[in-house]
Length: 211
Ligand code: B1M
Image 1 (cartoon, protein in one colour):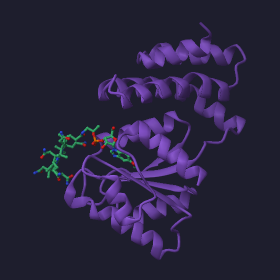
Image 2 (spheres, helix red, strand yellow):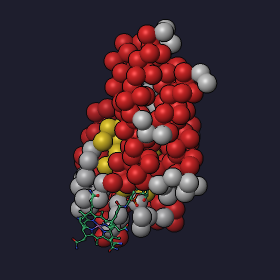
Image 3 (cartoon, helix red, strand yellow):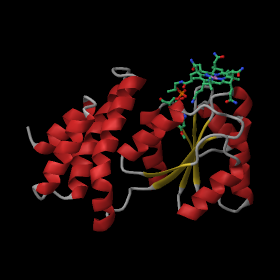
Protein backbone atom coordinates (compact mmCIF):
# COMPACT_ATOMS: atom_id res chain seq x y z
CA UNK A 1 0.00 0.00 0.00
CA UNK A 2 1.35 3.47 -0.90
CA UNK A 3 1.79 6.12 1.80
CA UNK A 4 -1.11 8.10 0.29
CA UNK A 5 -3.39 5.06 0.52
CA UNK A 6 -2.18 4.45 4.05
CA UNK A 7 -3.03 8.05 5.03
CA UNK A 8 -6.51 7.67 3.51
CA UNK A 9 -7.05 4.31 5.25
CA UNK A 10 -5.93 5.64 8.67
CA UNK A 11 -8.15 8.72 8.23
CA UNK A 12 -11.13 6.48 7.44
CA UNK A 13 -10.38 4.53 10.65
CA UNK A 14 -10.07 7.82 12.57
CA UNK A 15 -6.47 7.26 13.66
CA UNK A 16 -5.49 10.92 14.19
CA UNK A 17 -1.94 10.46 15.58
CA UNK A 18 -1.08 7.96 12.82
CA UNK A 19 -2.44 10.28 10.11
CA UNK A 20 -0.35 13.16 11.50
CA UNK A 21 2.75 10.95 11.58
CA UNK A 22 2.23 9.64 8.02
CA UNK A 23 1.57 13.12 6.63
CA UNK A 24 4.80 14.40 8.22
CA UNK A 25 6.66 11.36 6.89
CA UNK A 26 5.34 11.92 3.34
CA UNK A 27 6.41 15.58 3.49
CA UNK A 28 9.86 14.60 4.79
CA UNK A 29 10.14 12.21 1.83
CA UNK A 30 9.50 15.01 -0.64
CA UNK A 31 5.80 14.45 -1.47
CA UNK A 32 4.18 17.83 -2.19
CA UNK A 33 1.63 19.20 0.32
CA UNK A 34 -0.95 19.42 -2.49
CA UNK A 35 -0.53 15.74 -3.31
CA UNK A 36 -0.82 14.69 0.35
CA UNK A 37 -3.97 16.80 0.63
CA UNK A 38 -5.73 15.46 -2.48
CA UNK A 39 -4.49 11.85 -2.62
CA UNK A 40 -4.36 11.26 1.16
CA UNK A 41 -6.70 13.42 3.23
CA UNK A 42 -9.36 14.37 0.65
CA UNK A 43 -9.38 10.84 -0.80
CA UNK A 44 -10.06 9.45 2.70
CA UNK A 45 -12.79 12.01 3.47
CA UNK A 46 -14.44 11.22 0.10
CA UNK A 47 -14.76 7.58 1.14
CA UNK A 48 -16.25 8.61 4.50
CA UNK A 49 -18.68 10.93 2.68
CA UNK A 50 -19.87 8.16 0.36
CA UNK A 51 -20.28 5.69 3.25
CA UNK A 52 -22.17 8.33 5.27
CA UNK A 53 -24.56 8.91 2.34
CA UNK A 54 -25.24 5.15 2.15
CA UNK A 55 -25.73 4.91 5.95
CA UNK A 56 -22.74 2.60 6.18
CA UNK A 57 -21.17 4.93 8.78
CA UNK A 58 -22.84 7.40 11.14
CA UNK A 59 -22.17 10.78 12.82
CA UNK A 60 -19.61 9.50 15.36
CA UNK A 61 -17.44 7.87 12.66
CA UNK A 62 -17.58 11.06 10.56
CA UNK A 63 -16.55 13.16 13.56
CA UNK A 64 -13.66 10.83 14.35
CA UNK A 65 -12.51 10.81 10.72
CA UNK A 66 -12.78 14.61 10.63
CA UNK A 67 -10.59 14.82 13.73
CA UNK A 68 -7.98 12.71 11.93
CA UNK A 69 -8.28 14.95 8.89
CA UNK A 70 -7.66 18.02 11.08
CA UNK A 71 -4.56 16.34 12.58
CA UNK A 72 -3.14 15.93 9.07
CA UNK A 73 -4.27 19.39 7.99
CA UNK A 74 -2.41 20.89 10.96
CA UNK A 75 0.85 19.69 9.38
CA UNK A 76 -0.15 20.71 5.85
CA UNK A 77 -1.80 24.12 6.34
CA UNK A 78 1.35 26.27 6.72
CA UNK A 79 3.01 24.37 3.86
CA UNK A 80 -0.03 24.75 1.60
CA UNK A 81 -0.15 28.48 2.30
CA UNK A 82 3.59 28.81 1.58
CA UNK A 83 3.20 26.78 -1.66
CA UNK A 84 0.27 28.98 -2.74
CA UNK A 85 -2.15 26.02 -3.04
CA UNK A 86 -5.58 27.58 -3.55
CA UNK A 87 -8.76 26.16 -2.02
CA UNK A 88 -11.28 24.88 -4.59
CA UNK A 89 -13.76 27.49 -3.34
CA UNK A 90 -14.74 29.61 -0.35
CA UNK A 91 -17.92 28.94 1.59
CA UNK A 92 -19.39 31.02 4.41
CA UNK A 93 -21.55 28.86 6.61
CA UNK A 94 -23.68 29.31 9.70
CA UNK A 95 -26.82 28.34 11.56
CA UNK A 96 -29.50 30.93 10.90
CA UNK A 97 -30.82 33.60 13.25
CA UNK A 98 -32.74 32.25 16.24
CA UNK A 99 -31.29 28.76 15.86
CA UNK A 100 -28.60 27.32 18.13
CA UNK A 101 -28.26 23.81 16.65
CA UNK A 102 -24.78 23.33 15.21
CA UNK A 103 -23.92 19.63 15.15
CA UNK A 104 -25.09 19.11 11.56
CA UNK A 105 -23.63 22.44 10.45
CA UNK A 106 -20.26 21.47 11.91
CA UNK A 107 -20.37 18.18 10.01
CA UNK A 108 -21.04 20.07 6.79
CA UNK A 109 -18.03 22.33 7.56
CA UNK A 110 -15.80 19.30 8.07
CA UNK A 111 -16.91 17.59 4.86
CA UNK A 112 -16.43 20.80 2.86
CA UNK A 113 -12.94 21.30 4.33
CA UNK A 114 -12.22 17.65 3.64
CA UNK A 115 -13.13 18.24 0.00
CA UNK A 116 -10.71 21.17 -0.29
CA UNK A 117 -13.00 24.17 0.33
CA UNK A 118 -12.00 27.05 2.59
CA UNK A 119 -14.79 27.34 5.14
CA UNK A 120 -15.57 30.53 7.04
CA UNK A 121 -17.74 29.37 9.93
CA UNK A 122 -19.98 32.14 11.29
CA UNK A 123 -21.28 29.90 14.08
CA UNK A 124 -24.89 29.96 15.30
CA UNK A 125 -27.70 32.54 15.44
CA UNK A 126 -26.39 34.33 12.32
CA UNK A 127 -28.21 37.38 11.00
CA UNK A 128 -28.44 38.02 7.24
CA UNK A 129 -26.01 40.93 7.73
CA UNK A 130 -23.45 38.64 9.37
CA UNK A 131 -23.66 36.09 6.52
CA UNK A 132 -23.32 38.73 3.83
CA UNK A 133 -20.50 40.65 5.55
CA UNK A 134 -18.52 37.43 6.06
CA UNK A 135 -19.00 36.48 2.40
CA UNK A 136 -18.00 39.87 0.99
CA UNK A 137 -15.10 40.33 3.43
CA UNK A 138 -13.65 36.91 2.53
CA UNK A 139 -14.52 36.80 -1.17
CA UNK A 140 -16.73 33.71 -0.68
CA UNK A 141 -19.02 32.72 -3.53
CA UNK A 142 -21.33 30.45 -1.52
CA UNK A 143 -23.35 31.09 1.64
CA UNK A 144 -24.44 27.88 3.39
CA UNK A 145 -27.27 28.04 5.90
CA UNK A 146 -28.40 25.45 8.40
CA UNK A 147 -31.73 25.40 10.29
CA UNK A 148 -33.11 22.72 12.60
CA UNK A 149 -36.29 24.47 13.70
CA UNK A 150 -39.34 25.02 11.52
CA UNK A 151 -39.62 28.43 13.23
CA UNK A 152 -36.16 29.52 12.03
CA UNK A 153 -36.51 28.39 8.41
CA UNK A 154 -37.87 31.84 7.41
CA UNK A 155 -34.46 33.26 8.40
CA UNK A 156 -33.10 31.48 5.31
CA UNK A 157 -35.56 33.39 3.17
CA UNK A 158 -34.43 36.62 4.86
CA UNK A 159 -30.81 35.93 3.83
CA UNK A 160 -31.85 35.25 0.20
CA UNK A 161 -33.87 38.49 0.17
CA UNK A 162 -31.03 40.51 1.74
CA UNK A 163 -28.63 39.16 -0.88
CA UNK A 164 -31.00 40.21 -3.66
CA UNK A 165 -31.41 43.66 -2.09
CA UNK A 166 -27.63 44.05 -1.92
CA UNK A 167 -27.43 43.21 -5.65
CA UNK A 168 -25.47 40.03 -4.88
CA UNK A 169 -27.96 37.37 -6.00
CA UNK A 170 -26.24 35.10 -8.50
CA UNK A 171 -22.80 36.43 -7.55
CA UNK A 172 -23.01 34.74 -4.16
CA UNK A 173 -24.91 31.44 -4.32
CA UNK A 174 -27.00 30.12 -1.43
CA UNK A 175 -27.15 26.54 -0.19
CA UNK A 176 -29.48 25.37 2.58
CA UNK A 177 -29.94 22.30 4.73
CA UNK A 178 -31.09 20.93 8.08
CA UNK A 179 -33.60 18.32 9.17
CA UNK A 180 -36.86 20.25 8.42
CA UNK A 181 -35.52 21.81 5.19
CA UNK A 182 -36.47 20.41 1.77
CA UNK A 183 -35.69 20.98 -1.91
CA UNK A 184 -39.22 22.31 -2.22
CA UNK A 185 -38.49 24.96 0.42
CA UNK A 186 -35.23 25.86 -1.36
CA UNK A 187 -37.19 26.39 -4.59
CA UNK A 188 -39.84 28.40 -2.75
CA UNK A 189 -37.34 30.88 -1.26
CA UNK A 190 -35.06 31.04 -4.31
CA UNK A 191 -32.05 29.32 -2.69
CA UNK A 192 -29.58 28.00 -5.27
CA UNK A 193 -29.07 24.61 -3.67
CA UNK A 194 -30.31 22.16 -1.05
CA UNK A 195 -28.48 19.21 0.46
CA UNK A 196 -30.07 16.56 2.68
CA UNK A 197 -26.78 15.60 4.36
CA UNK A 198 -23.19 16.71 4.85
CA UNK A 199 -21.73 14.57 2.06
CA UNK A 200 -24.30 15.79 -0.48
CA UNK A 201 -23.49 19.36 0.62
CA UNK A 202 -20.04 18.85 -0.93
CA UNK A 203 -21.59 17.74 -4.25
CA UNK A 204 -23.95 20.73 -4.26
CA UNK A 205 -21.16 23.21 -3.37
CA UNK A 206 -19.03 21.84 -6.24
CA UNK A 207 -22.04 22.12 -8.57
CA UNK A 208 -22.64 25.74 -7.49
CA UNK A 209 -18.97 26.55 -8.20
CA UNK A 210 -19.45 25.32 -11.78
CA UNK A 211 -22.72 27.21 -12.51
CO1 B1M B 1 -33.22 20.78 19.55
N1 B1M B 1 -34.82 20.40 18.49
N2 B1M B 1 -34.17 22.29 20.40
N3 B1M B 1 -31.65 20.94 20.67
N4 B1M B 1 -32.71 19.10 18.89
C1 B1M B 1 -34.73 19.32 17.51
C2 B1M B 1 -34.25 19.85 16.16
C3 B1M B 1 -36.22 18.78 17.47
C4 B1M B 1 -36.59 18.08 16.16
C5 B1M B 1 -36.47 17.86 18.69
C6 B1M B 1 -37.89 17.35 18.78
O1 B1M B 1 -38.76 18.06 19.20
N5 B1M B 1 -38.14 16.15 18.33
C7 B1M B 1 -37.03 20.09 17.74
C8 B1M B 1 -37.39 20.89 16.50
C9 B1M B 1 -38.86 20.80 16.12
C10 B1M B 1 -39.08 21.59 14.89
O2 B1M B 1 -39.02 22.77 14.87
N6 B1M B 1 -39.33 20.87 13.81
C11 B1M B 1 -36.08 20.83 18.65
C12 B1M B 1 -36.47 21.85 19.55
C13 B1M B 1 -37.94 22.15 19.63
C14 B1M B 1 -35.55 22.56 20.36
C15 B1M B 1 -35.83 23.67 21.37
C16 B1M B 1 -36.89 24.70 20.94
C17 B1M B 1 -36.20 22.95 22.67
C18 B1M B 1 -36.64 23.88 23.79
O3 B1M B 1 -35.83 24.62 24.29
N7 B1M B 1 -37.91 23.82 24.06
C19 B1M B 1 -34.43 24.33 21.55
C20 B1M B 1 -34.22 25.44 20.53
C21 B1M B 1 -32.95 26.19 20.77
C22 B1M B 1 -32.66 27.11 19.61
O4 B1M B 1 -32.07 26.67 18.63
N8 B1M B 1 -33.09 28.37 19.68
C23 B1M B 1 -33.54 23.17 21.25
C24 B1M B 1 -32.27 23.01 21.80
C25 B1M B 1 -31.44 21.94 21.56
C26 B1M B 1 -30.10 21.73 22.28
C27 B1M B 1 -29.35 23.00 22.58
C28 B1M B 1 -30.42 21.01 23.55
C29 B1M B 1 -29.38 20.72 21.31
C30 B1M B 1 -28.48 21.41 20.26
C31 B1M B 1 -27.01 21.27 20.59
C32 B1M B 1 -26.17 21.72 19.43
O5 B1M B 1 -26.52 21.61 18.25
N9 B1M B 1 -25.02 22.20 19.78
C33 B1M B 1 -30.56 20.11 20.57
C34 B1M B 1 -30.49 18.88 19.85
C35 B1M B 1 -29.18 18.10 19.95
C36 B1M B 1 -31.57 18.40 19.07
C37 B1M B 1 -31.72 17.05 18.36
C38 B1M B 1 -31.92 16.01 19.46
C39 B1M B 1 -30.57 16.59 17.49
C40 B1M B 1 -30.18 17.58 16.38
C41 B1M B 1 -28.88 17.09 15.76
O6 B1M B 1 -27.81 17.55 16.11
N10 B1M B 1 -28.98 16.08 14.86
C42 B1M B 1 -33.01 17.26 17.47
C43 B1M B 1 -33.90 16.04 17.40
C44 B1M B 1 -33.43 15.07 16.35
O7 B1M B 1 -33.03 15.46 15.28
N11 B1M B 1 -33.52 13.83 16.68
C45 B1M B 1 -33.58 18.51 18.02
C46 B1M B 1 -27.78 15.42 14.27
C47 B1M B 1 -27.28 16.23 13.07
C48 B1M B 1 -26.06 15.52 12.48
O8 B1M B 1 -28.29 16.25 12.09
O9 B1M B 1 -28.55 18.75 12.26
O10 B1M B 1 -30.12 17.36 10.80
P1 B1M B 1 -28.79 17.58 11.39
O11 B1M B 1 -27.76 17.78 10.18
C49 B1M B 1 -27.67 16.92 9.07
C50 B1M B 1 -28.56 17.31 7.89
O12 B1M B 1 -29.75 17.97 8.29
C51 B1M B 1 -27.66 18.15 7.02
O13 B1M B 1 -26.38 17.56 7.22
C52 B1M B 1 -26.25 17.09 8.56
C53 B1M B 1 -25.41 15.85 8.55
O14 B1M B 1 -25.82 14.93 7.61
N12 B1M B 1 -27.50 19.57 7.21
C54 B1M B 1 -27.13 20.35 6.17
C55 B1M B 1 -27.56 20.33 8.32
N13 B1M B 1 -27.26 21.59 8.04
C56 B1M B 1 -26.98 21.64 6.72
C57 B1M B 1 -26.57 22.70 5.90
C58 B1M B 1 -26.35 22.43 4.55
C59 B1M B 1 -26.53 21.16 4.03
C60 B1M B 1 -26.90 20.10 4.83
O15 B1M B 1 -25.96 23.37 3.68
C61 B1M B 1 -25.48 24.59 4.17
